[in-house]
Image 1 (cartoon, rainbow, N blue to C red):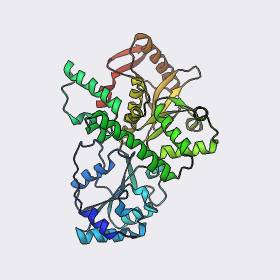
Image 2: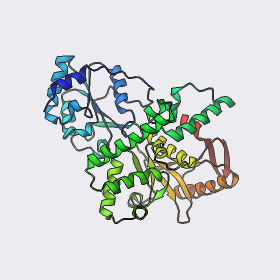
Image 3: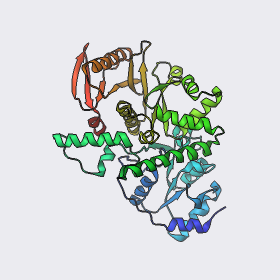
Image 4: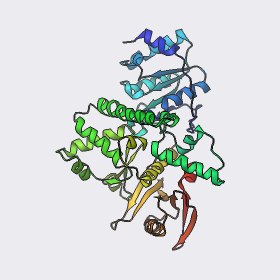
Length: 415
């Protein structure tokens, strides 16, 4: 049922798009639905506000707002009528958290067919291309918006030239802060550490209850909570279904475990990355490595302070962001039967494009170990683009006719 008074109040409310401008660029003059997906609180709503300032005759609707809760898709044209009477007839419609409305895909198709320019956001994998039904297949362009990248993080204050010792010192200090508190926009702009902790703690609970428990009607809160916390405790680590069950310590069926893992990934907060194999089946099988959308939450949960693991998680998120420009990119890790491992296998189309190791310690022994793994994977996967991302060491090494680039993480993130 339409709540006309609440809807009118929503449309009359002034919204200021203030803060740090995001690096994500989306096309605005194309006859496609532009879908912006990402975890809750990553800044999708703010991104739409900013975009609406650049376009004329926009109507913004948030399905998280009480004014629009319970709206049926067929009632939406009444909302357009209210907006037209109150302000102006929209030509651009922005639908925030679209997954909250039943039949949203048919609604969006209907709006698109009537000539409206459509932007949608969602904090659910149901808005990703592989989940979109036939009504919109081929008619959407999807972009991932995660919490701030390191490049965006550094926009909050102008840093000195990183070619100077002072500038590099500032960058390393900023990187350490970024790897500690993460990149959620509200947290980045908050200066008080106690308030940062409070915000992150509330985010964790909000995501857990709204995007996981309520959206998916989770029955076992105990196991659901365990799985969520387990993921934030074990990011950048390989895990298996057997290990998850063992750590839980109570009886849980494989069926429930698979279902909960899938629903956890649906929140776009936790990612399970497969081991690379030429076999598609094996790539989709377990074990997998866990990564999370933001490392700050793990801090407030009292989990890993391992800076090497935080660096690795940061690299995974940056590779995900870069998929916006290269959508055919696939990300895996590599491991052989002797335990040699490469953190990231970057595949683009049918080609292995790059092999990446992430390494905080740069002693000769550690670097030699990382190089041996890279060389083994390089030969097996026929890839010569080999990179080790370090804390602050830069250089090149030649081994067995292959060049390995050692690049400071901060420089790679800003490139």
